[in-house]
Image 1 (cartoon, rainbow, N blue to C red):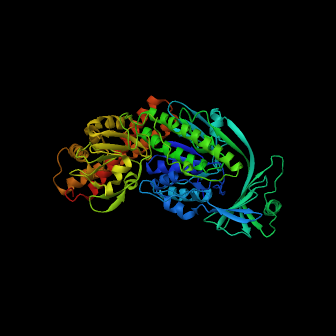
Image 2: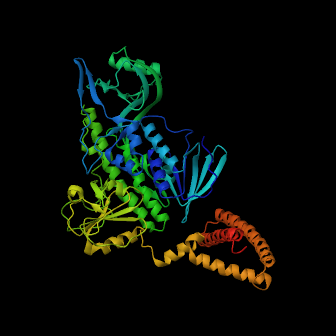
Image 3: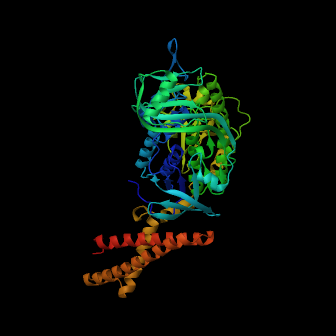
Length: 615
């Protein structure tokens, strides 16, 4: 059962619960960013539409902790069985390559989209979140501080305030249309049907195709992880279609002449026109587009869902960083990096569609998305003298390594999580630690990682005293020598990965519990002592004086707790109504102070009731 969200303030609103929206939600959840994930549909999508999971997306899913469940939900693409007048002919349509240490995922997976999204929802649930269906975004307004969204729910309309709104709501995106962002492109002159069907009469060991050299093409692809097939066929624009089991059986027989094949039931079906479109912009102020809301692909090559997942993967860490204090300009790199990728992928999808029209259904490395990168990104630290190995903006390769403790591991395991990673090769330098940065040195006198068979050195093209900075989304940000580490530190400062300064430590300790904060404990002890003296006129000595002092103190504490609780509730009401930045900042400060005071008083009260010395 989907519950109605009760919070009226959050950090991010995600509109759309497809693969892109779910990927973004998982990434934000593991970064402890507050969000609301909504969809106007009453239930999750039930179709197989985007069934291809490319190798680069598999790497993303490994980082998000869901790859094994997704692999187990589907299988490899089957052989293509072309049915001709001379009999069936099997051919391999998807180029299969063996995994390598640098590229552990080489084989495109066939997983029905609804199963991929189910696994993502399960992962999201593990992180403590769930999508809210039957929650429709019906309007929004933005200002310099955030976005106010109006959401129609089963219990009435709600107004939700957030720092950012993300439109992951598909090709007909309400968010994009409301922003007035253009969606230029073209209709590709192809209308098609796609349906998930239960079929009798065909084996599930191949992707069956009929009429490949005619306008009457039709295919049945087994949907691994289910007992269904996906039926696909181009159809004329001016024909009414019957998408029932009986109608599709008659359609199939008319095209193939096979009366031994019967479609018993239809789980989902759609007739659509193929389009190639790209949004003019991915952002308007505090509102962003991702996935199909930003780009619309023909199904050839299995690129649409994968590009959307990687959009979200790119945007998630940047949103979290800016919400955590990084410069707002970091968010400008989302469109700068992802829009050119979508433009290139759209071109590939169109080329593959034209090839398919000419009966060329072969797919190679170009669909894997492993070679896509951000060489021209402002987040890629220039290194003009580098002429070998990985470059800033390239995908960071995997490699087997061994920990100093003797256990084997992989670079991808070291990268996994929401942090940046700094790898030093054959060096004894020790850069300063920072929150959100994991530092590992390979070799050297104190290296915590051993390079098994020089795999890291060869994969990255490293020499002694060189360092590689890897972004949270698995792309190389910098390759520098030890002498140039200051440039890496400056780069990290610019993306919000800053040193934990002494003042920051002291500020943090004041908010820590009593057991880990001596400064707080000391100040509370002094205050307590003064309070007890003032209440009795002198330090209590007898058991009766102790009891009187304790009773008076507990009464004052109870009164203070009630007053501070009332103050906290008032602050929350103020936060829901105040929109101007200055007032909001002041009220947040009051709220923080009040909450700290309540925590301190609760600790003090607990001490009064359990301290044997006080008794």
